[in-house]
Length: 364
Image 1 (tube, rainbow, N blue to C red):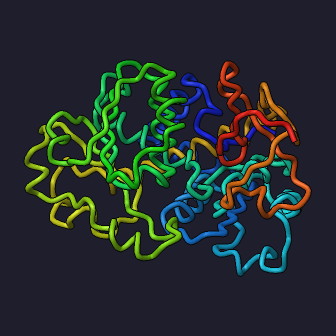
Image 2 (image 1 turned 90 degrees about the horizontal axis):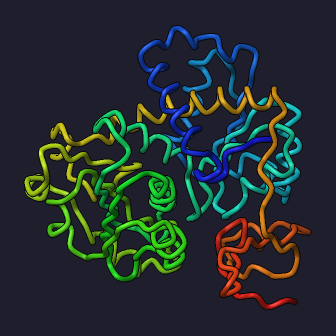
């Protein structure tokens, strides 16, 4: 069954198709009011969420469908020890499509392998968040009129920020994109993303710790929250949480055409005084998320009717390596196949299909 687990699951042509559908939904909502009549979306949120869960629910209701599900792990049978795979099989009996958020990286992929309905990754740990990226793409497109020839600054938590990882992966397919990575040393973009996404695709990028120095050249400033829930040490979070705060004074350094995006929620990394600036696009971004999720639901339900399947994992090793990432779903899901895909054949580097942890080939 075709699902959306990672933004790279969709081609540029498919992304463009979704953008056009979302724009049409925004301009002509009445055309889609009964598009999903009789269909049910299951929202499986094992982790707290406001925008993502509610926008999925609003999207399905505005398509004429219905919603069922839960908003925390304690409300599900996961609290009794039920596996993600079994949950996915069970939900497939009740719904036509599901959206899953889970703290374990790779959980939506496990669900997609077990479910008989499409699965949408609504965020898995610090791994990726493809539907947020769809909202980001639509926002950039509607605000600036293009998705190429852009300088994009990503600021804040670039280590654990799944929205940043997904956005960079998506933008790597467009022409003449420069990425400015703004983060403290402790929260820099993971090396594998730099090498396997930026460098392999020939993208221009720079790293800096100074937001003020970076702002003047940016077309898009993508702010992120320093995420307390991703830190093992509260003290480390406290030390880094106020690394960057966007203020009107810093906004004055930016281009008149620059746009500020943020996946939300914000804590204090954007002053509320910035909200009045017409370049602040983050609340329009939240509305765009609903329209993109409507377009995505329509696409996946149509492909389910056509019998489309997930693309197979190429150049994979199954049960030859073991993932040692404690945040990976393989650390808790019993009897789960360990699947590693080859990302560098010359150096024999493989990555866990669930969480992207790296392994240099050593058979066990």
